[in-house]
Image (cartoon, rainbow, N blue to C red):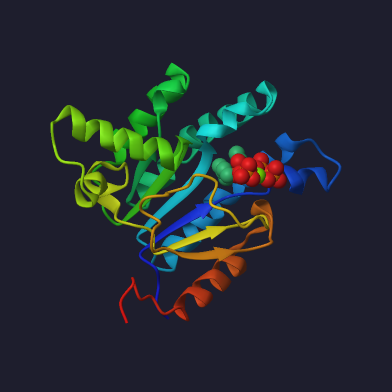
Length: 225
Ligand code: IPE
Ligand code: IPE
Ligand code: MG
């Protein structure tokens, strides 16, 4: 089977998963964060090199404060709890997005985790937090302007957060919606898209394998014949 080297996942559906069980949305976010470890382990076992997970968008700040606070709390727990496993499995942890808006405490944990795992090269776990594809393009263009470099397709690519990790071969969105919601707009130009109706907390190894099987039937042409 042809395994995509870089997979991006829009992990959607936590809130609906909880509400359908008569629970609060935060209950779904907890289940969703537990699923991150399960799918990360599985994807790397399958041979995926880079996994980019959309955890919190630039627009997710518009949610009620209580929900944003809970998501930030879960991120802190995640980065504190899983670093041992990340180091043991030779995973390079990277967090992409505008991190300046996160609490100083969370920023410190994230930078420490990234520093500790920076020499790992077996796999990359890239987590998008306060991330937006449009914002990323502006960030890249501004960097070029500040260096007085030409705005070209290649130069923009080189300034994107994902520059060292390449473009996603496959983007999966769980939770039934068929949209990109500002995820990797530039580097996703030729990504294969896979939409699953399964809500993120239920998106297990078997569901991930269905996405891989579907990917392996795709004929990628990149505009050529
Ligand atoms: C995805 O689940 C997680 C984040 C966006 C942080 P949602 O919270 O969007 O869940 P639904 O889509 O409302 O069910
Ligand atoms: C996309 O999901 C963001 C993440 C999964 C982190 P949203 O639930 O925020 O997207 P929309 O609002 O359905 O487009
Ligand atoms: Mg959603």
